[in-house]
Figure 1 (cartoon, rainbow, N blue to C red):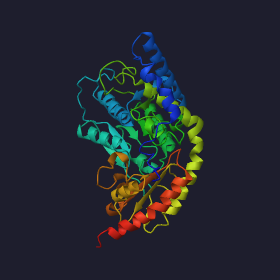
Figure 2 (cartoon, rainbow, N blue to C red; figure 1 turned 30 degrees about the vertical axis):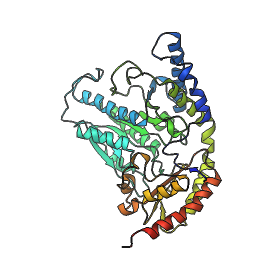
Figure 3 (tube, rainbow, N blue to C red; figure 1 turned 180 degrees about the horizontal axis):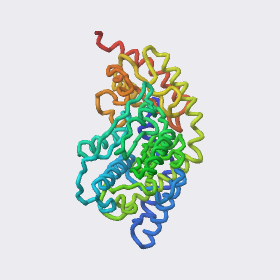
Figure 4 (cartoon, one colour; figure 1 turned 45 degrees about the vertical axis):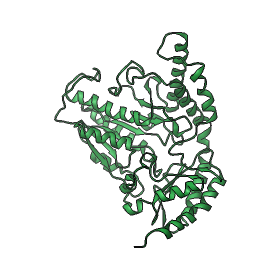
Length: 413
């Protein structure tokens, strides 16, 4: 049976050259980067070299890169760490003290603005901060294509707004948000605030799905915090990073040793850090140039899928990531389509990978105004560097009969 993997937005394979780069640090160069002996020094050198590689990719300083276990941890550190730091400022506490300090909540709570289509890592973190009484949160609506409105964002900003968090690329439908324009807006507002000696706004983006395909120059984007993980661009699962602009206040969320400049305790995962840097080297030198090929394959897949009755494209038709083709199929359950596709050797997704075990409709599709009964029929095909024309042809040949069979099986109302 032919096998076609079209779930690259959930995770990618580890590239052979990435695996080759990380392999020695498991059993040959296995020192702890925090130890002073030669094994530790060797590990420390490669960690710092990797930090420099990642900083160069983002046009940042090496001192602004912090390694984490994944994008979810980076997002939690960014949101919770910044809010705790700002709460201390609001409470006239010393923001430089350790995270163990007990602080008073002020009546004037910090305010966060995010979007209704963020990854659960952002939404659940904001929900936690709200429930803990640490912040108020505004969730921006989106249009039918999943895009935010910049004018609406500007209207929602308050004097106590301290954080705006907008994802770069939506992981379910592939819509690309106007991150550079958001950054310019916040920069303009901050210039006015600073002139009035008011508290500035910090800008965070979840760039998890963007790293491989879009410009992530942090100065061009005007972001203060940027989160990402390696397993979306051919590094292994279990390694991520946070870009933190110099001067951005943050309180660490994992207490322990002094690793990562005392901002993230825990022994450095040297092999995976090496892998992350190597994968980004490949993105710069090799993978980004494949975008045009992916776009061609994606657009052909979209064109053929839309020939099926009652199949609609989700996400923006033009402002979308090269690797994501997403649809809703009316009259069919997404889970049933996934199982039948899997029986034919095809891997896809229904909604995001992190919520695929939940039978409720996608929060992203609902926020885009898609009816719940239609949203249940979501289907995402996400391409990768190894996707071939034969793979796409096989999916196009296989999928229509699956839809037809499931519609025939559906109860008649």
